Length: 217
Image 1 (cartoon, rainbow, N blue to C red):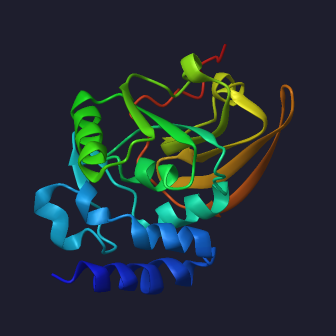
Image 2: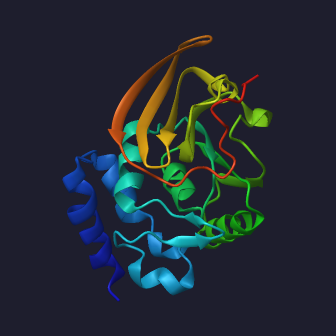
C-alpha cells in the first residue's frame, strides 16, 4: 500500500474540506505516520475515515476530528501539555511534534502499554505516558499551557480547569452521547475562564466521565 499517497488523500480529501486550513497543522498531519499507531489488523485503513477500534470499547478519533482539534488548540513550541486519554499514542505524537512536552494519562492499562510502545518505537522522546484517571486533573505537573480531553464529558470538571496557567487552553467535547459540542476554554485570569463553542460532533464518552449530578471539588 502507498501510505504516502493515502496520507496526502487523507489531508486533501478528508481534513482540508472541513475547514482545517492551518498549514502548520496540515504539515504535522502529513509528517506523523498514523499507520504506525494503529493495531496491525487496521493498518490498511489507518488513513481512511473508518473508526479504528483499540479494544475494550475504545477507538481512535477519525482524522478530520484530530485535525480540527489541532487547529483549535494552536499548540506552541513552549507549551506544556496534558492529554486526558492516551489511546494509541497517535494524538500525543501530533501534540508532541509542536509542543515542548506532553504528559498523556490513560485509565486502561492495555492502552497505556500500547501508547508507550507505539511512541517509543516511533522515536517520540517528549511524551510521558502514565496510567491513571486524569479527568479531574493531574496535579503532579500542573499548571499546564494546554489540556486536551480526548473523549466526551457531560461537563468540564472545575478541578481540571484549575490546572490551566493563565492564558492556557482546554479542549473537550461536552454533552451527551449523541449530541456534543467541541469547546475551547481559556483561562483569562486566575480562576476566570472564557469558553468558545467550536463545532458539533459526537465522540465516544470518556470511560471515567463525571456524572452531571456529581460535585467537583
